[in-house]
Image (cartoon, rainbow, N blue to C red; front, side, top):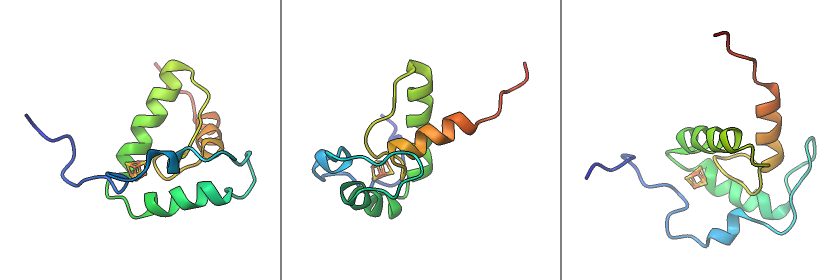
Amino acid sequence: MTARFDFPPACLGQDPEIWFPLQESDEGERPTSGEARALLICRGCPIAAECLADRLAWEVGTKTDPWGVCGGKTAAQRRALVRSRKPVAA
Ligand code: SF4
């Protein structure tokens, strides 16, 4: 079996609830204190870019409204990223 990543994610072994704070910021707002805690951990994650790409692909593919912190971005930040993407010519 091949490992998906060469380095373990920074959230490995942490309480998953950290990434799903009770209060979430809206677009344009500063992250809540709960989000900031998760973002701080994500900032040191060696696979943050891959994590964000996977999460965005899933959220777009399933048309799921983002929630929680993932890939170093809050739900509001990911929502803004998706909305700002440019259409790809076929
Ligand atoms: S970037 Fe993704 S894999 Fe890394 S700590 Fe954050 S949520 Fe976990």
